[in-house]
Length: 394
Image 1 (cartoon, helix red, strand yellow):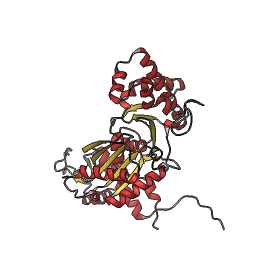
Image 2: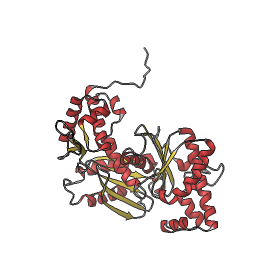
Image 3: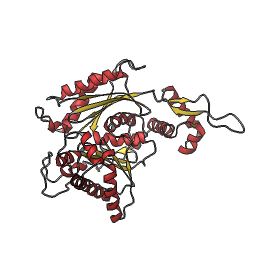
Image 4: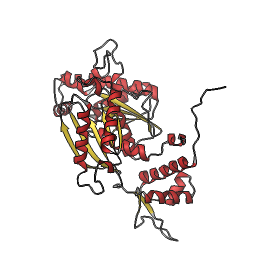
């Protein structure tokens, strides 16, 4: 008997219908003020199917009809146009850094409705950490129409540094265990969907979701936080790797037998091309001073900045050599600070290798992790994932 499995599974009518509904919603989200006829033309779905799917989206409150059409016809009635109901759903996005948490209430349109920041020392146990997230989320939703409790949210997304568990000295668990504990604990407490992941991965999803067509469906995302991270979006879906640790750009070996990294290896990019490395080499402590130095650096400071950006650019180009993507987005809290320095080096190195890559600076900067975490909840629930077609009834 042949017991080999191909990995291919069939679909059914219900999953196909849900996928098509997601496709229709995505076109309304991307193009806005669009008619049913235009959706049919763009998606190649027959008009009656589009009408049925739109009816379902309206009943769910995700889509609204404009009372007055922006399109006029010489003959017949003007077509009814459809837009996303941006306040249909809300999510809370949490961005965790080693000294603070930023939390934001985000609507379906990607707008931050409320936000708050908490400066703290990492707790000695993950339960206290999760309780802090619940407290901040509860404060954010107070007085919001349609939200009586956290269970009324579409979900809560939490972006944490991948090595969080190793940083908490009194709670020495692996980062995988940390994320699983936080997710399970929050789901029991809040009663809505919870997504916990690497902050750089979630920020990459946020770039795609909130970009609304500004980036292609496949691109490399470089996250410039205190350390260097990354994410990879392939055909609109996040690639996390076999163990969830893909695109750890900060741990590419930049210098063989170089400086010892906090991960235990030697010569990692984080020790040469990260914001933390620049702070150390420039002998500064806060972000404001870093921005001031970038704007008016002395000759000595410029040499240090150049060395750090050289390390970062070299590593990014090495990744581009493997991936061969058309677009690279530089994002994260410090993206705008370093972008002009980094771009010059990247263009030179890409020119040498004859790479044609569009390098963009993200519009989401200091709050990229929080917006990305919130966006991932929406993306996971509403985006037209091809993987959803490969689900079968249990």
